[in-house]
Image 1 (spheres, one colour):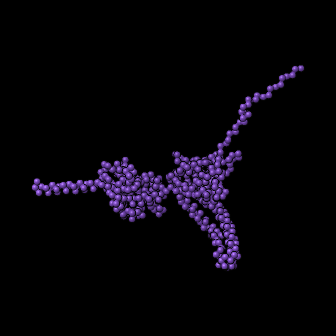
Image 2 (cartoon, helix red, strand yellow; image 1 turned 90 degrees about the horizontal axis):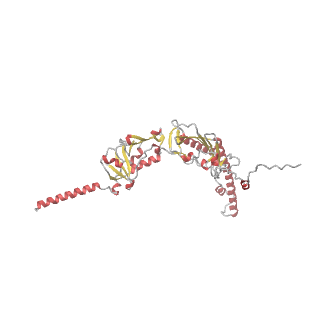
Image 3 (cartoon, helix red, strand yellow; image 1 turned 90 degrees about the vertical axis):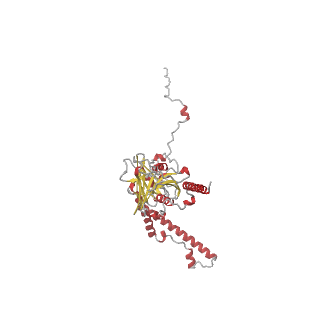
Length: 432
């Protein structure tokens, strides 16, 4: 073999080795270190607050939910402008902003469906097209299957690109519009509630109440004579209906009005907040509408009582401070006379606003309560809510649910073994 032939073979071998290395490198997953600089949506992190609209589109090009930002915050177009869950929305946007590419996947459309990134015009598409508007350049991204079995990550494909990707983390988007709704309705602690009055569709009334806000349990009013409640705490769930109250769904009140048979309930707090509701059942769902108002008489009476207590407590504190100061001066512990103005002022307790300016205190407290009423009615007004079944069960209660079952009187043991009497036999007739 001459030198020329040898060099040719060496050169061919080198080319083959380089080609093999390149193919092998192209098929390797991107390393974790490279991942740190490979953002899924470069530059989006700096623009995340500029998003004004998000549209989720599913199979057969059907719009699932459209979230828009306006003067009243984020709302849902498909729900007539009902508020969106801002916490969930922001969490989703930040996941997109921080998403990093783990590795490239197929660019063959025939295999898109396996990853859930096929075109959403397909009636059998599994993924969701997410469209973000309000940015310098609108962004569109098909979010496919979560690769839980493969160690985590989500399959995605950027709009207009053939290459699909595996992205770190779970980016799957909610497909049900109800899951993008704001769920919070109210959160009024049971410790604030003074009484709850329930009226069922038949007009029967059940009232539970507390005499003092510090009472551990609600009491049942008007217990029938000869009956008793099943336990000391049986009525507590009725007073906690408004605590942590969430909705499963919401609809415009005009579209889902109350039915013919309704439950009514009224909840009055010690500080005067008055929340009313109308509830009904339709097609297996529990619906309710709410209103809020301020009972000014109850609010004023509560403030007056609190101020009277504050005045008494302050007077007691003044008396205690005066005795302590006199004792200290008598002992000569600080070397100052009890008549020293500076020492006396330092020992005096500071009067709370309820004592120093009762009128201002009352005005400020009423202002806070009225603001709470306005906020609640902003949530309530114009909407019908679907309640969780466990909350509705606290509305659908009757007096019988509060009481122990009547004990059946057992027959006396002697009576049980005795033969029935058929009357006293007549005495035999006397012979003449």
